[in-house]
Amino acid sequence: MQSTENKILLIGFMGAGKSSFLRKLQRNGANYHFVDLDQEILKGKGLSHLGELIESVGWGPFRQMEYDFLKDMMNSGDNLVIALGGGAFNENNQKLLEKGTTIWLNTPFDICFNRIKESIERPLVKLSREELQKLFNERVLQYKKCKYILNLEQIEQINSLKDLFSHIGPT
Image (cartoon, rainbow, N blue to C red; front, side, top):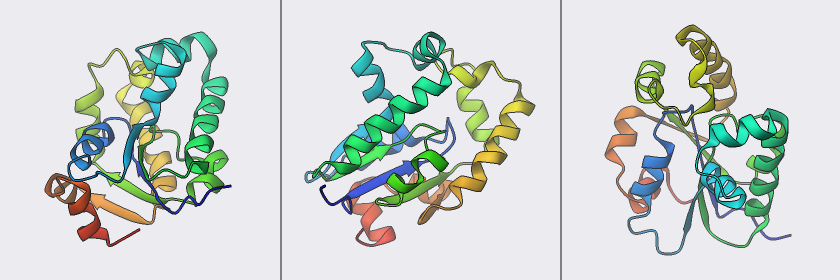
């Protein structure tokens, strides 16, 4: 098995800005590959929307796909920055995630909600604001276990992988 110390994992609720932050980190990130876990799963299935996949297979099989893709990435010898899906930071994936450097993008719920409320591509958007707030609060308990936590101001100030490393230090 390969070393996984060269894995940076971006964690956060849907709408926290993980995919956007991933794109910013690509600047000056020549020695790293940048992966959006949800997009990799969709690409592997030939689909374009997460909701489409989850409706066809269900949450259990989707979480298994997530685990399988994540396991392969964590065991690769590649330097990776991986944006995880909002629910991927869970007990089932905990052992895998402990092998990487976890960073929680701590974006307030109201901002996340405003970013996702109109998105038909996100499967959980069908939930009410109150249900989403409850889910957010539950997931925050897991997210707090991350090695690093970036608040919204820090997220906005970091514009490259080099900036991230200068903020958190080498992984």
